[in-house]
Length: 354
Length: 262
Image (tube, rainbow over all chains, first blue to last red; front, side):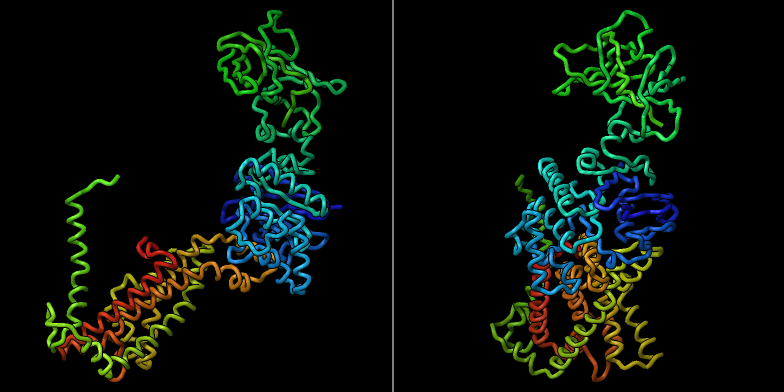
């Protein structure tokens, strides 16, 4: 069931358009993340849904009602801010109780509900502490508890982990997913970190310049980016421009100059006949020079330009007739700069993007 | 890095002598037992401190000064806090202009401001002298309130206010429950500095005082014109102590750097 719908929403600051004709659906109980580089409009989308911004055009529907002009304090959405935004002058208990007190909940109920939610975020016994006495991770939990205790219809996260150090981040990520699934609460999550988004989301929307480039399950996006932008953003560093394509039985044959390649169909792309191929550095195979000529499908001769040691593998920049390619490869005996090699493009790893 | 610079040390010493010298001389002369203000004093006595409380004008104008400064402070806060909030929170066309307008009373010479206020408030609109005095003092306190409160709002994370809104608070209740408590020390500091500015003011007050209506600094000015005894030194010392104590409180609250930064 669709809980939240944005219908051709536009937002502009002055003459600058931030969101243009944006459409978005969120299913009840799902966690959807908005992923994109800074300035892509993901935070604007979140602030619009939260009610801090008003759409210039378009409609925001929530559970069948028009929320476009509904004031933020009447929306019953829980928000977790990047800076946590805890009330510095209040104890943990009063921070969490704030929303309940605003709703004129009986003080006995406030007590029991705050206690219960603090247990959920594993912060039982911290009631009398003040925000400045807590670690970053603990503040984050208080912020989540404060947003959850009002039993919100929607939970919004704005880059919640970006102020935590790397160790805490992965732990907190699991925690957020656990709480979200335990309570079955519909959640919108904004981040610029793809690993973070992919690991916790039911669906991910990749945004660029105020538009959603692709929205799908994380596994699908990871394997089949729909556009060049998405591919680049999630780590496809190599691109090939083909001049011809032919398709038979799900296998696509491609030509770039005198070189031939095959790729499998990309279910993500919207336009048929895409002529741009993308492949991750990890999937590109570097092999010793192959003297059998240019006829072998999916291979490309080249010369190693740069070889760098990454710890687990070596990274090569290989110059070819079709441009430079980056490949990562684990090996005992690495290739050296200036060595002639052959690049192999596995058909199931070469993806065609718009 | 603790190098000794003889020249720099001497220069600093001279600056301190220049700044503090007159204050020390006044301090010393206030204990003069004789009837003529002189330095060094002939002995030691509290005679002139007692004399302060015998001059009827000092007590009366002290009360007036306190009343005007406190009441003006309240009015300046009522205008100043919302102004500082609006200037920090939102951006709109002409924001810099409005900001400049609120700070302009510091930039315009007090003599000019005082004269203008007298001309319109007293002469043209026939307001009572006390009302003129109150308006004048409110105006000169406003820039300090706006500046200091805006400065403490500049370090305030407005996401905190948004959090309160998202939890169901209305705009007003979010402001009073969440914003205000977090800029409290800034507001108190702004009140104190504005109070000092008003309490020691001469150039505005001088136009709005007359027979029966006067502030302490004006009364002191009048007193010096007619008497040359050490009373004036004694009262100056008391005012220095008051100023010093308030400055100490401000420093404790938010640091004096808030006022020296441009």
